[in-house]
Image 1 (cartoon, rainbow, N blue to C red):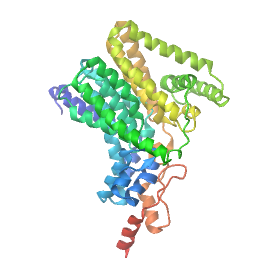
Image 2: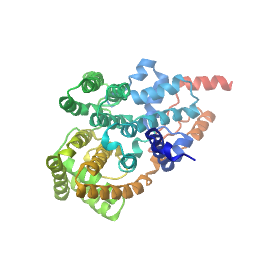
Image 3: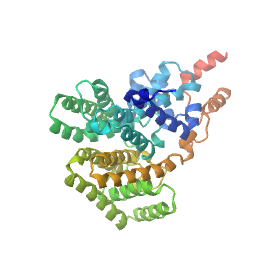
Image 4: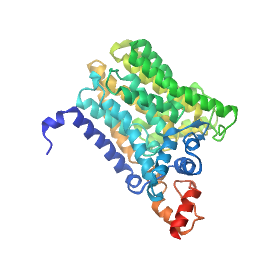
Length: 439
């Protein structure tokens, strides 16, 4: 048995909480870790490119107008380590898991005083596990930009230390914007933090994020100039405050507090959905969301101890605004449950940790209310956590090794990897090596 003294050591506590986090991910979708799974473009685009292009071309492949070194790097690792086709998805799955753990790892190992009690770190783990809708970006490399963006937001929020995790944080800040456009929106957050702290560590963090952002933006502008895969994805391309209110009302208030599929949530969601469909404004959504934003803002004004969490609040709003602007298919896609989770993951996660910070820094009555809300959110969130659409559980029912076996028996067959007819065209180099070995 583990002694009480060992359990009191923070490093062991961190290990236990990370194990708990991984365990629940496994319990939610065991087939992904047991059988392996490519997620949509992860296999269809990036894994194929890793074989069909040269190393540099595959590393900097453009999809949606930007580079994604997370997905391209993970598939290149599988390719150049000569991982057998049957086991290639394990590489991308566990690389995705590694980056998925980074935000919670930063919180659990932070030296901020408010995170010192084990109870607070336990709640932080459970909140990041159950509150944000995450199955769409879980256990795969395609969407690690969302976990990296969350990690960057935590780096800005948490205190700096001359030596503590310095190289890790700087590396993350450079790498994050090279996996997608979303981390770039945090540049104002890091600039605010720099003006507040006025120290070398914050300057280094800001410059690292700026460097990675400059490289990504350079690629993006070049791709726009030469129309390289920029218009291949039909993004919304516009933003309005009423859209923001609609999304906050449904994804940050209704679903976390009432559940995805409760009778009340269904009625509320249907009303807002039909309003958007008819290009009308939902007065209820706009009013409640505006009051919510005003109430949270007033807490920062009235209670100075809570003001540090304003960075989390601002990060949540900025990332949500960008998500609404860039959502595929328009704002209406952000209203239905189980889909487009990646666009609202960040606001849900950041607001959850903001609430946890309130439970530590508000006066006694505020702490009690915050803790009651946290417990309710965890109760509803734990139910939401295990109710997934089929594609998030096991790749739409396609068992990867069985699909590979079908291909080995018939090389004209394209192994299925996800829902809606997603598949992989096996790269010619893999076909040639298999064909030679069979002879």
